[in-house]
Image 1 (cartoon, rainbow, N blue to C red):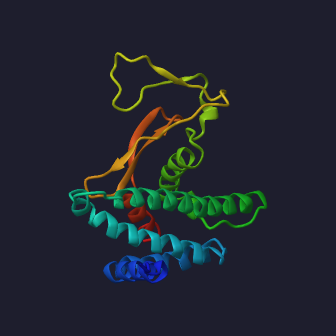
Image 2: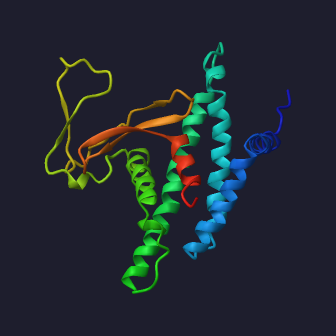
Image 3: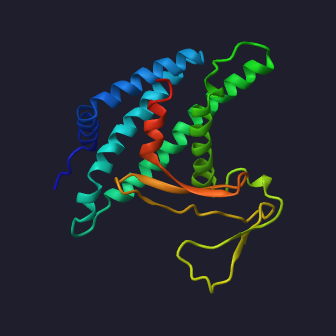
Length: 217
């Protein structure tokens, strides 16, 4: 049996996503030129638009989550959705980090900054991406060097009778498996741990995307 080529199918998926989320696709293109221009980093245009392509594809998967979740037999769409969602998180973080660093370098050189990285909305978005990126990419708690002592932790779903485990930032074999799941509207979400402010909270991928698209409005 001759199997179909993957490339046409993949192209078709993104074509469907662009047609379904035309407004969001246009918003990503607009954001790419606006941010790249204000940070004077033209190369970022393509990178931002690539994350936009992945976002609108993920929106389609998120819309279809309930249908797929009720399917019989082997269903891996949620697995791929989470895989793409984590890829999207890391990609967006690196772009925002580059923008933030560009403004910091400008300050150190006594040059004008974009002003964007000083916006409360930018700081809030970047913080959420930062808290998610480290556990996803390095299996560690973000900014764990700020922990003055080992952090007592319990696995999600563990019985309280089970012994408490400790996350020691000085232990070279330390690791953190960030809890993740799917929100009510079918989007990937993660339980972010903010050690600096001693709090934890759920961060939804789709909400992050919406906040990014509203950044310069």
